[in-house]
Image (spheres, rainbow, N blue to C red):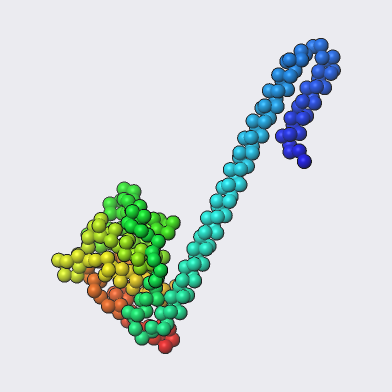
Length: 247
């Protein structure tokens, strides 16, 4: 089936030929007629290419949009699946908060090979703001004196990768330990991060603390704190995993 542009080309050529016939061909030299028909055909061909290019671009944009939407849905489903698994595993350790941390620690190797994979760099003109990329997503880390915050840290739970991220932040700006003499290490920062993640999962979605717990805050006061202490510091509630899991 011919498309509209092909039909236009044929119609143009036929029209030119018809005019030539009516004119007895004596008034329009053959070379001029051929040139006109050729120019018209080239013009229409160029337009066809342009329209085809626009259509391809439109299709590509639509495909990219659908792919992005599907990726977002897949990521959300993956998070929900991970959350469910975490809760099921954590229930086995309702009487031991420290063991419950294992429920949110991935046992598989991380996806990061080094801090270079994070592409960490200053973010905009705001002092102390940094951006880094993890698992195809951009995150924001904010530094103030003796304080680091990672926005949406609740979406990262692979321990090996968390170590690399924490060490990268330490390499940029160290944070004092509780004694204000020593400095926090990647190990104790990861432990706090894991506590944060578990607390985030345990708190109900309609709890006002949910929004606060999605971002991990590293500062001197939380160094070396037990699970119960960190949970209380950030939620204002006494931890009772037994009641949370119906035990």
